[in-house]
Length: 391
Length: 164
Ligand SMILES: Cc1ncc(COP(=O)(O)O)c(C=O)c1O
Image (cartoon, rainbow over all chains, first blue to last red; front, side, top):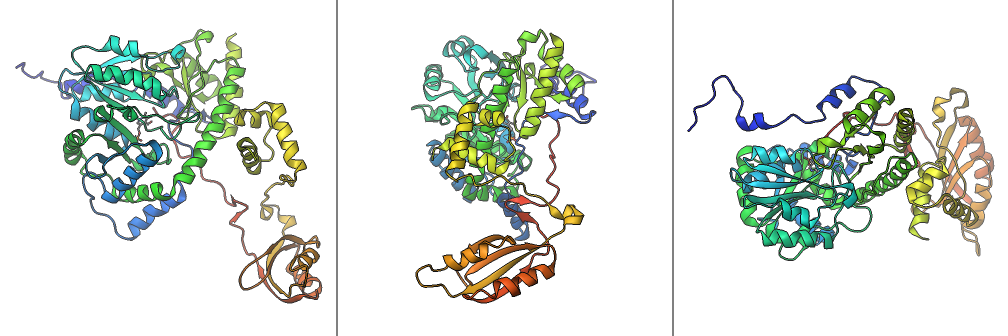
């Protein structure tokens, strides 16, 4: 055993992890006024009123104690019904669903439940910034596989095959994707599933943007025969129900995996917040109309935004889901960092440079269209002005 | 009616000043197609007009009074309530008129410059109509929400400028 290094107080694992790549922009943007922000990864809607009201009512009735570790059974039953109805995913509320503190916690406990030291986890990028660090924190080794705009940011089977080693334990995918908005259909997922089975891997499938699928229906990899047993689905209330601040998510998986996750969850979190769980029951029982309205509005804004990007000469593949556009800025000759910083300083539009989302992201910027139409219009005008000064 | 038509209607109901090119992009149609649909909906009288929701209390010299009047009437043979309804809604002071179920028959929304003006309308115009049996007038004290629009300074965007 190597003796511990004197003087360094924080753990090696934590020291391995880089701070988030957007910190610099965050600090810069927060110090400026009159910014149009396309940098926000959350809905611009406020949680539907009936859901907020259910939370207030929960407090009024005095529900201020812990719930079951896995979450209130009533909520898990609602989640189970919702998954069956919306995505044809049958899961047992008693032992295949855990209510978590955001999808974020679900990702953490999923990884910690399956990763042994040295295991490799393939992370399909560009993607949500937390995956690779969470793999590291779980003791595993993140292996990045970058997708490209030419492939519409979908994972190609041969790419996956090339990345697999004897140490590979699992792959992490997320469709609809943050930051590209890319989706994968059933047939494309089927080709991935074949390889997953062949190499006896697990899949962590983050489907938190499933409701925000604009052209056709969302396909879950767990729908593919044989995959239910190998898939851990991550989801939550943050995006579809505009509940980011409530910190409520859920994870569904076969019961051997949920019982492993539950051990971590019960010792670290105990349970998700009680009033948030009451609110979530209301959201699932009576909130789907609101979800539908919000999704319709995102779709209209997506259509407007992507067409406008094409008009001003920033090629943008059509994002099939989530609420991000990921236009290419390659023909400006700037790196995504330079583009984002100069755009912020000269035109006061905040976007996120694509490289922070991992390989395949450079040469792009992430622009969230979860903001008002007026803001989108003004942002397009300003970005147009900005790229014209570069010519 | 197809779904694009419905989508256009919803969007212009929310904001009738929306530019056609913006609207066309949002619903994924060409500008010409969008204009054609709007024209058709206007001709079919699905779109009846374009108006603004104005908070007149902020325009001091033009303050108005609004009242809702419950009216009980005896319906006439052959024409039911329609006859008397028409006599009432022809008055320019009448902003809206509904046939109701329950304790009374017609609900009249009326707007005037002063309470006096409304009182005069009720006593001289409305209650003198033959089939009108009785009226009950309620004055509006404050507008919190009207036609789906909340009359307050909207909720601010609480989100931080950049999130991962
Ligand atoms: C793909 C993805 N997964 C998970 C999360 C985190 O969600 P939650 O707020 O439920 O923790 C986000 C938030 O941006 C995300 O984009």
